[in-house]
Image (cartoon, rainbow, N blue to C red):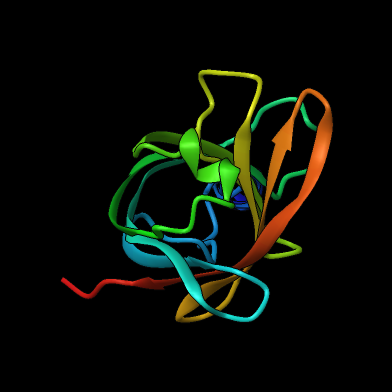
Amino acid sequence: MKIITLLSIMFVLMFNACSGSDSEKSISLKTGKYGYVLSDSSGNSLVEGEMSVVTITKQQGTGDVNDYEVTGSYTITKNTADSTYQGFSTMNGGEMKGYYNDARKFININTNPRIADANVFINAIVKSKSIEGGWHYSTFRGTHNEGGLFKATKIKK
């Protein structure tokens, strides 16, 4: 009887130790809608709109348990009339795609993932109530001197 009891206890302990290994921890980036502003380096608004983070999927095979792929969409509600900002010619709203690292709280977003040339990229830090960082315009010829500030704030339901 003692052997059966001892084996039962060992089985329960082993089962409990293994059962939590696949559970997901809560990450800082949340799905949902965010109001965003892209501005120049002086803080003057250039583009405003709404972005929707639809999926946050753990990346497999990266070797880092903190890596996630992010997908969603964005709309533009206000665009600058200043024609010197060439990067916004390819920002028409639509699909966005990126990567998020929860350990560093860092997100990278490509605002036009279906083409390889002439994209606006966002690099930012996820904070408790906002996402803040910068943006830059990149072409096959390299990154232009065009860039500025980015801020997005979660829209409450």
